[in-house]
Image (tube, rainbow, N blue to C red):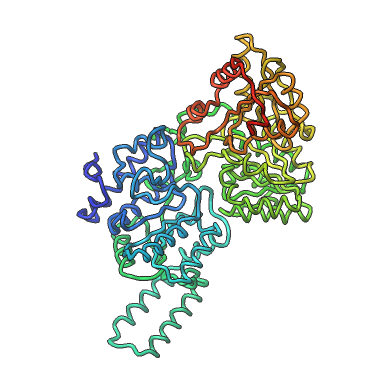
Length: 634
């Protein structure tokens, strides 16, 4: 029965609690997180692992004056509970509720709207230097996971902070995995750190011995410093963080509250860059999350008793369909290789990794490196497939342009989670990729209407002599039969799925089904409606678009991308370029605003991307008496 949590409304309420009471409070918070996330879905394992760590941070430091920055932010639930959002925590990731990530609009304790990784050290450094300029004497703490340390941006910030002697504290939450098990040299290095109790004990003995000497002359002090450095090099292979200029503390048990309190209190008295290494267990305190931390990293609503989802899958997802198709093609073509950025399970590549381990590359959370790696593979005869979430591929925009497309290399980008993804909110919606990719020369962009077309598009991309991108949603497939042998799609050609004369609806990918359903509603009101599956977003099938525009005079474009620079804009450009006048065109897509969390059904309806909404727009368009020039509108 909860008896401490109801009395916690602000971090200041922790100050009077004993270590034993803080441990009891941690248990209450952990149970609260399990109960709420079982109803709302969310990031479970990562949040269960940082309960004691978060409680200790808020006990020792004085947020929001002392600023705690959460890398990625998917481990901030305890932070939200402790900073005045306890009573609204049950609205987690719901429309109008609290966000699953830090959000400035929610609380002065949230300093950034985060959702991507490896950024916290840079942010803490910026806050620290601004504080110095303003004469503030606060603490700045970046809490970063071990997975985020595989991102190059984290090391750029570490290098800068150590070089200038910044007054910041970095807390490394080391649970041996981010979403999937961590990979790379940094992961091996941290494993060595964890497994070096000999060094830790020896260092403590040396520190104690020196402390007992009444006076140490300069010569002896230098000698002991050299000795300690030699011991570090001998026993812990480099002591990377101290070499970068940080005072290293750890590793410590991240669930031992007395030890955490002592460590953070000690760190407060120190100056310059400090690095505190804590070891935690992902999914701590919930047996199902401890046993399957990957599956219960980000979860839909689940049964607490079993850890199993409440809603059973009817079909496989597009991610899984992509993975199956890629394995099928890789069995026949040994030049195909696959690359992911720490997401083999999320992108559907786990089966490929098991079957072709020497042709699979998990680069860690390093999207820029993933793309440039692909360029090198493609330049020397391989056919790389880079599977990354749409929102995360944004981080490698420069590499896509300069390292792949400028050289016209045959790299295939598979953009998972394109469109609105639901409860993770604005940092994870994949609604910008059409706009940020279609401006790049040489790049072909496709989007499948179903799983069979996805297989054909992947086959087409792997046969194309140049870079391609395929975007698909976070959802289950439609359930159509998939051909045994894929077929190449005629390059740059769309298809007419339904003929009509009064109106044409043009769509691609996830929106094709919506367009067809809208056409059914319109036909019931005797509005003859043509539906075109564009298939290729770049290059567009200009002949089909122009013929349909001249025939129907009324066009609605439907896309799960922002309207600015998206598919509708591209169709307008085709009409303007070909001087087609007297056409009514209405674009339907994501408005010029960040879309909050919520179920995809609710979010698409809010954006007008549902059959009745499109049908209503069509009826309003047809009822207007005055047309206008597309060229004038552009």
